[in-house]
Each structure stands twice: as C-alpha cells, then as structure tokens.
Length: 267
Image (tube, rainbow, N blue to C red; front, top):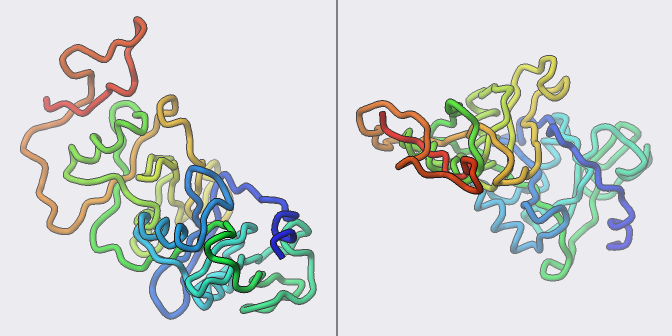
C-alpha cells in the first residue's frame, strides 16, 4: 500500500484550491504540509502541525463533506481517526485513475471520490495533513507597508498594529467565515505566502474561490505584505503614526541596505 502511494505523482497547486463548508459544523477543511515538503508528517506530527496553524485534524466525515462541496487535492493526508485519504473531484490518472470504485468514505465513480489508504502505521509512515478550523473570534487583515518586507519583518509589522502574524487556519477561517478577499499574497506565521479569493477574477489565480498558495518563498530574499490576526480585546497600538525605515540609520550590509533590517518606526 505504501508503494502505491509512492507511485502517485504529486500534484503541485501553486495557486491553491477551492474549499467549502465541512459538513454540519461551520468551518473549513484545508490541506497542509510544512516547509520541509510533502509527505513528511507522522500522525502525531500531523496533529501538532494542525494545532500550530489554529486547527485540528479533520474527521473523515468533514473531508467527505468538503469533497462533496468541491475540494480536490491529489496528495494523501492524515485524518483524525488515523486513516490516510485524499479527495478528488476531477478524476485524472495520477490521482487514483479516471474512474472505478474508490475505497472508504465517499466511494468513487467517474465523477471522483475520496481515495482511502485505510489506517496506516502512525509512527513510521509519513503523509500530509487535512486540518479543520471553525473558530475565528478575532479579525484577519492584510497589512500593506510602504514597501514589502522579508519574513523577519512580518511579526514587527503586525505587532505595530497590535496584532500577530496570522496562522494558516486563521486565514482559511477568515476566507470562509468572514469572506476575506484580497488578490495580494502575504506572509503567514509558518513562512508561507498565501492570499484569499472569494470572488474569482482575472489574474487572481483561477476561476474558483479558495486560498491560493505560493508555497514557502525564500524568507530573506522574497518580499511581501503580511496577513495579521488581531485577537478580541487586544490593546490598541499606542497613539501615534507608524512608518517604515532602518532604525538608527543602520541596516547596511555589504554596502547596501539589508532588507531584514527594514522595521516599523514611530513617526
């Protein structure tokens, strides 16, 4: 069975995928893998990865409901019960074939299904994770500084607004529950760059709603804005405006300004 997984072609989705309601609970299922790459997580590590992104491992029922709403993802991931599955809405050869039955929840026909590898060895085998999040008491917002920042500047940028860098689950929840729509990629807490699209349009990554992903860009060389999360009751930033610059006139490296030293400054 493990050999069968290794034969599957990993399908990259650089602009994300469309997700929707995950069953009776108001929330969203999202596939996740860390910076280290795909198929790197044991079951326990998958649980931890979802928790770090403000979620939990999805149940088989939640994944099935998400598939019925159009979730299509050709990479297998852990679920809460210890099984490994993946949803295919658009059948194709690298993703379990073009038709025929598919084991497990969801079944499967020529119209797709939830592919099921059954219960796997949770300490030895490694896959991605399917996470579920349904709670967003605060607010996610996109912060566009005067100029984009490297990942090291993201936390400082959000802190200047009384917020923290948003987690992946928080961005998905904001997209699903608060209809956050922004055609601009920004840093998230795990070092990935993503953006949420509620109303698909030209040059915004496809014809379907979803959270687009640019993967894990170089943290020092790539520059973006940042998605921040402000918790309920978080103290307002101190009075006064904020600008951007190099504190104390520093930030020089090799005769040029070092982007990592670009920081919010009170003005």
